[in-house]
Image 1 (cartoon, rainbow, N blue to C red):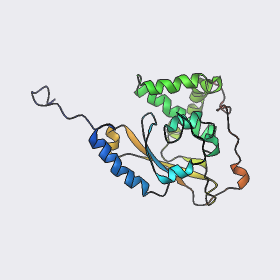
Image 2 (cartoon, rainbow, N blue to C red):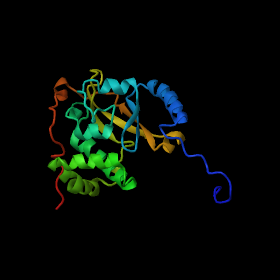
Image 3 (cartoon, rainbow, N blue to C red):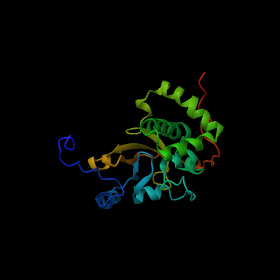
Image 4 (tube, rainbow, N blue to C red):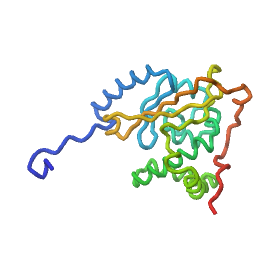
Length: 219
């Protein structure tokens, strides 16, 4: 409106590449490192901007990966990293399906995003995952409801390398600030349950080459 009335255009919101945003993220990283629970800041693609020490400890045992490392892109980690199931319990049903639902929603909002398109192409290379995305995901969403597929507040199994936690559950807390929201970013924190329900045997999870075998195809 100011531009139409002859005034100046409003300043664009700060993005992760601007000096203001970088300064904000540096200070936010200090805050993040004061949090005792695994926490990360991601954009709408789940590209990781920040992690804290607790997050790095949680995933310290996973093998390096050029595109699917948890500190690079958390969506790709959940879907494609062969070590994901060694940290994320009930990997297919509790983690993969909600992330596929998140991808579907993000792809609708950002129809021309090349990063999201690349994830979708990689899904298409795996017949099991592709069938789950195209057929199983709509079936699952009808069964659980759109709200249940969300991340904030959900309780999911977690296999923590610290024996004080072991195989337990965590609640996901998804938050943002006005500045992070302008960057289309959010903070995700894993809050482990206080009482572990684990044995050492529970942590022996086989590396999986394919995912989502538990998802039934829609009729």
